[in-house]
Image (cartoon, rainbow, N blue to C red; front, side, top):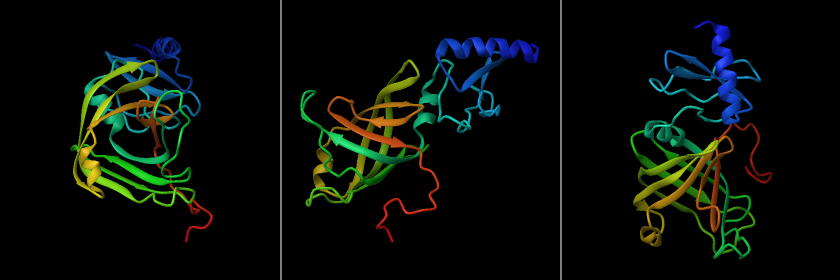
Length: 207
């Protein structure tokens, strides 16, 4: 197929799935993402080979997803930027670790898991560091528009506080162009993004 033919098919697919940044080139049954903004490629042909981070938008896939694709979307280091809970849909949200907390979630390709959370400057006085490590398992998933929604299990081996071992392993998740959310979004939200190199301290008072 000519390059022009690939572009026409790609533009049609991109319009159907509603991806403003990418069009999809088709070649011998495989797909590849390109960036309409910078005209750069977003990685290797897949599904035979999973692509790395696209140049403009975090991992968004326009083709049929496989479990390997979903795991690849979760794997890596995520920076925690928001943590909030509430008892029910009608209750106000609360931030048990403050609004300027710091933390990371690390999902490794081999199934290892590590989570660390430090309270922010406006956290309640009794808020303490929370952390654990163990393994993670992708239990279920579905494609919901431009997002992937599902359940990932966190199986803890070591914890910073004994009560963490009483937690149920199920963690609902949503991953898309805006990042990763752990929680059901109704009563719990842990919002994460891919970390970026920072040349300045995150907090003005940091040393």
